[in-house]
Amino acid sequence: MSDPRGRLHDYVNDSLPAAERAAFERELARDPRLREELDDLLALVAAARDLPGVAPARDLWPGIAGRIRRRRIVRVRFVLPALAAAAAAAAVVFFALPADVEDRAPAPSMSPSTARGAADSLDAEFSRSTREVLAALSRDGSSLDPETVAIIEENLQKIERAMGEIRAALERDPNNAALQRVLTAENRRRHQVLKHAAALSAI
Amino acid sequence: MDALTLPRDERSARSPGPGPAGEGVVARARTGDLDAFETLYRANVGRVYSVCLRMLADPIRAEEATQDAFVRAWERLGKFEGRSSFATWLHRIAVNIVLDRKRSDRRRGPAEDVDDLEIAERARVGPEGLLDLERAIASLPPGARIAFVLHDVEGYRHREIAEMTGTAEGTWKSQLHRARRLLREAMQR
Image (cartoon, rainbow over all chains, first blue to last red; front, side, top):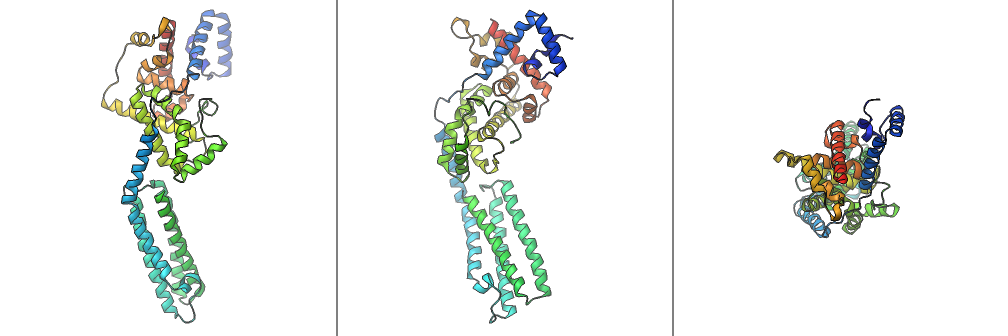
C-alpha cells in the first residue's frame, strides 16, 4: 500500500472503496503513529460537528422586516396602479356586456351580427387588458419573478390559441350559438388568469 | 436548488427548521404573512448566522449576509417546492449569498496571504493555551475556511461544494486537507 497517510482524509470522509478501506485499517493496526493521527483528525471533525450555533449580537428582524416592507411599498407605488387599471378595464368590459353574451347563447332578440359584434368588442378589450397586465408584470419593480410571469404568459397563450380556433370555427359558422358560448367561456378564463396575476402581485 | 442535500442538516439538533407544525407556518408565509415569516426567522436565524459568520469570519458582514438571506428567501418563497426542508432551502440561500460575496472579494483583489505558521499561532488562543476552535477557523485562509466550514461543520459533500462554487472537487479536497492540517497543528501547540 502507498503512503497510508494520503488516505487519512478519505477514510475520515468515509469515501474509500471497501478494499482500500480494509487495507487502511490493517495499516492502522500496525502503525500506532497513524492511529494517533487518525484519532486527532477524528477529534477535530467531531469538534467541528459539535460546534454550537452562534446568535447574532442584535436582533436582525427589524432590519429584515423593514426591507421587506419597503419593497412592498415600492411595488404598490409602481406596479399595482397599472395592474388595477388593467384589471378594472377588463372587469368593466366583462360585466358591462349583455348577460346573454356572458352566460348563454345570444338571445333570440339579438341578431347574430349584434351578438358577434359584442363578442368581438369584448375580445378586443380583453386582449388590450392582457397586454397591459403583462407589461406591468414585466416592468422593474414587479413583485413577480420572471418564472411566474412566464407561467402567466404561457396560460394566456394557451387560452389565446383556444380562442383562435373558436374564432376560426365561427368564421365558418357565424350563427353557431354553442361556439359563441365557448368563446365567452374562454374570455372568462382569461379574465380569471388576469385577476390571479393581479392578486399574486399584490401579495 | 432543492437537489442539494445537507446530510447533517436534517438530523442536527442545531437545525430547528420547521417540523410538521412548521409546514403550516411556511404555507402562511408563502401567502405573504409577515408574522409567519418572522416565526421562520426566529427558528432559523441562529443556524443561518452561524454559517455566515464562520464562512466570512466577520460579524458585521455576517449580519448583512444573514439579512440578505432572509430577504431573498422571502422574495423566493413562491419557488420553494418543499422537496427539502425550509431550513435546508434557506441554508443553501445563505451559503450562496456568502459565496457570491467571496467571489466579489476576489474580483476586488487577492486574499491576504498569510503564512501557515502564523495562522496556527493566531489560532492558539485562550487561557492555558486551550484551542478556541471558532477563532482557529476564523484564522484560516478564506479557501480553507470555506472548505472546512461547509464540509466538516455543515456536512456538505465535496461534490455539492464543487457544484455551488463551480470549482473542481479536487480543489476543495486540497483546501479541506490544508484546513484540517492547520487546525490540528494549532491543537497540538
